[in-house]
Length: 355
Image (cartoon, rainbow, N blue to C red):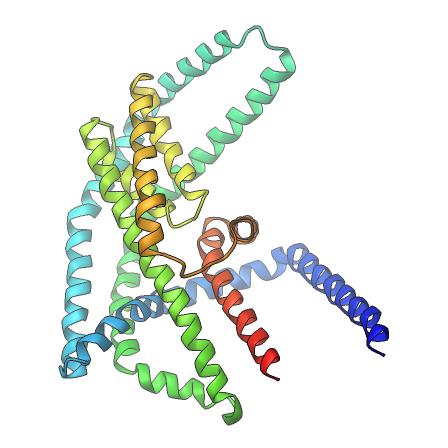
């Protein structure tokens, strides 16, 4: 009887696999239809998502302060003022400098393009002995890189100059964060009502496990990214690299993406350094390599630690899938979503073992 069930189980999983594949195929094909709806929902829910994430990161600190018999309202007020005061001061100091460097970069763009074209010409001269087919492939690659850089620069400038949208966004977030922190218990109890009583214990364990893994990962990654930005900025300043602050911020932000992030962040730094001095490239790459070496071998293992404990192959697959579905945002969200999925699967497996 046990042997008879094996083929049926195998057939069941094959059918499930085919249905999942067809579902994903339809999602990709129908994306233009529902993509607009998702875009609208994303822009609508973005302040709530960002506020929820900030509140999620700040709540453990407030809980810790409250454990020292300090009233919760005072703890919220203290952390709230400290966090948003610090962010406000940082924006006040950094935003004008970044905007100035972006404007300067756009003004210097024609000169940088001329230098870039000279470098490409020299590259063609050095590779003149190669077949014409190789040069055609090089042309395609260069055109692709140029288009990507132009689009990225346009998005950056557009993002930094949409001041009105930014003001609304930044005004709404502090209000939402305050209410998320203040009414955390009420929100928690509200969602708890939707879970049947017999599943309360299991769901509590599941959410605790997700909170432990996801919270440690996100907090750790933010600290590591801050370290990468600061050390890169100091290194680029010492090397007298143009737009050091802008490049350091890009390096820090892209470092959120495991494996691919440091490479993506290094491309603008190398491209700008190329227009300054070919010899300086070696020092820039060495500086980036040292920063990433410290980050990957010293900081990440201790700060992020084993909070996710997922095989690198699974992480790379998730990053590629996230990139295909949602671009850079998809790659950033891929590992946290994979962490949640892993915890859920592990929790379900433990429940099955007990039953």
